Length: 447
Image (cartoon, rainbow, N blue to C red; front, side, top):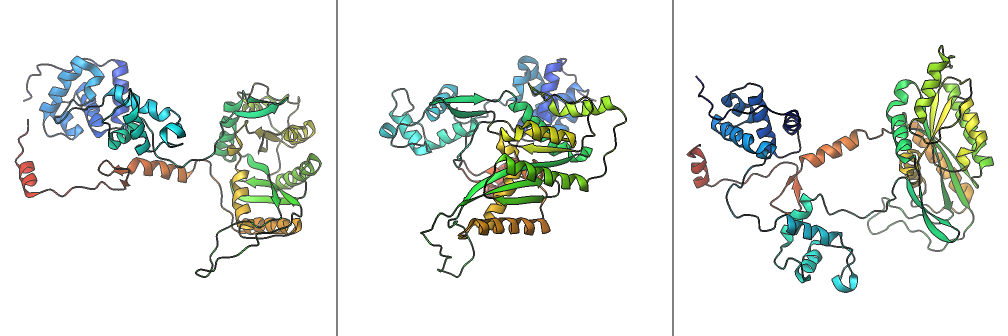
């Protein structure tokens, strides 16, 4: 027979129930928060305190009773555990904000002795500042940065998608693409859904110029005898690379050229795309022209200036991802693509990372040119095209945000910090208990 509840759980509001359900399903939040949310939801669903304790992984229903009483007074704040003994935190919200304000400040090499903050230089700056923290430790700084989502990372170049800087009349101005978000969504949708609905998704890009010079690279060589390349070379022309890539099966079509004007690029694109369309199943005239028009328009959703479509549209057969260049938007090329049932999807300004043709170009460029010294443009073209043919004999399909991204996310979630340092392990390191600690644990009184 269950005991009479002196302070039963009050009815939950819809907002409180939603928050508790989100916390109870969390896989990355603190375990104590998840357990308390599960216990409160169990009681709210009519379970006894003993059953709620079992669901939360606790030994006694008394802990649930205390939690319910605290929840009735403080609401969702009861999920956060109270101070459990030991020294109180010396550095509160104001001190943590002071640390974050310091790291957001660009260091002055003359005053701070560095151009990039490290933990030690940041500690020195906080010690010296008139309004700083004269006793703060490196560990406290590290904890504050970790809690705020900062981490020690390798520098890299970047560009903001949808914004680029251009030189106009001798001045540098920032140009913004108003359709950046819509274009990114359409291209990602093409990668994720295009092939599954029967559309061939290809990407195209142009790489180069590649000069006739020695290209540094890494290769296997006898110990202490690396491959040597000449340090002097003659400039003898450059090469551009035209690329058409099919991520679904990894097939790539490449051609090396000396120039990459529209008069060279457009005929090559038309020839290759015509060959690709011939390999696809024969198109069938749509039974409902209106539904076919709706399908075409779905690939222009969100664009501020969608293209004007003809009255009669052919069946949609493919999607082509291109860079946002003026030559790619030539009316003659766009009209030809529409007549063939192909919709061009243009990357936004600063969004060339959305074009998977650039990825295959970097891979094949590295395989073909690194560690080589090719003295004529014809040799560079032959090397690049031969490498592409070798790739096609054993291609690798590309998946947008595939298993590798999921593995990396799961790996980050499984890491365990080691003793307050910057090191992590895949499994938690459990400290060996002494005999006294084992005895105390076995004879601990519950409350």
